Length: 308
Image 1 (cartoon, one colour):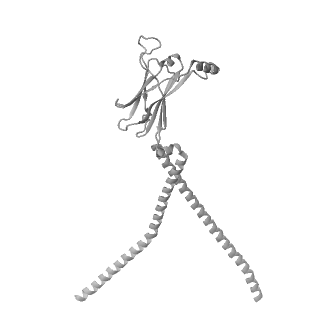
Image 2 (cartoon, helix red, strand yellow):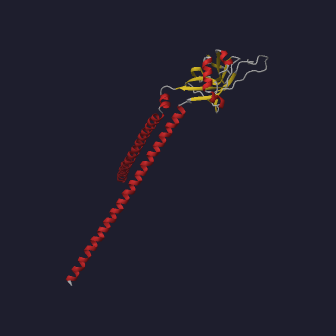
Image 3 (cartoon, helix red, strand yellow):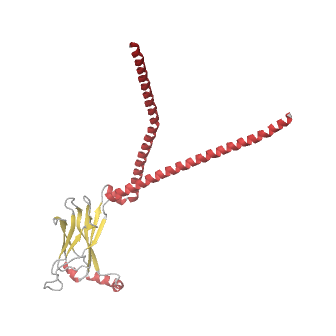
């Protein structure tokens, strides 16, 4: 009988060990799964925070760029008007060609206050005998404010480039196929600088510009007003090095926002750590005060009747 009981106990020990090993393995797997889940949640949280900070940094830089950087260039066609009801030879106009150009786009000023601009007039003029005989002619430009007051004015001279009769004949023979097919034209393009450094006044902003060509014999195919901004300082860097500026701006915003987030998180952790301690100390002080007051009251009650 003793031998059989020893056999049974010997059979139970391996099964108990196996059951303990399975329990240990199960606990290890559960622990590993919980740690892996915790790591995944932490990684996703960190990724979300970093992505949000990057998005906010890019948004702040884009807002700063589009609010700080003015329009770099502005071009608009120029359409001239003049009188035609006078008795004069066919080669003369009744009045000087004049054009009124709006410096507004979508009800907003094209020129930014405090920014220097270069204004130039592009003239496409036929290489005709009339224009060749015209010689020098004046171009007068006047800028007006919304109230009709004159803000700035300029007067510039220009003329066609001289070309001899031989040069004209050779160029005509050389480009004859292009002239016949309409690919090219016998014209000259003049670029006349109206303002070299024009700065708009914030108190009297320019709304319109009046361009007048002081000649009643000039012939023009088409004309266009070009406005280019002269950037300096930070605007020069932002315009000429956009990728580098964007990288520096977004990185600076990201570092600043990350520092604010870390400081806020550390402050929150410190507040949570100190809150229970303060509650315990305050509670202890209240309890001691209550015990002291109760003890004082009891002694007073005991002393009272004895005196009576």
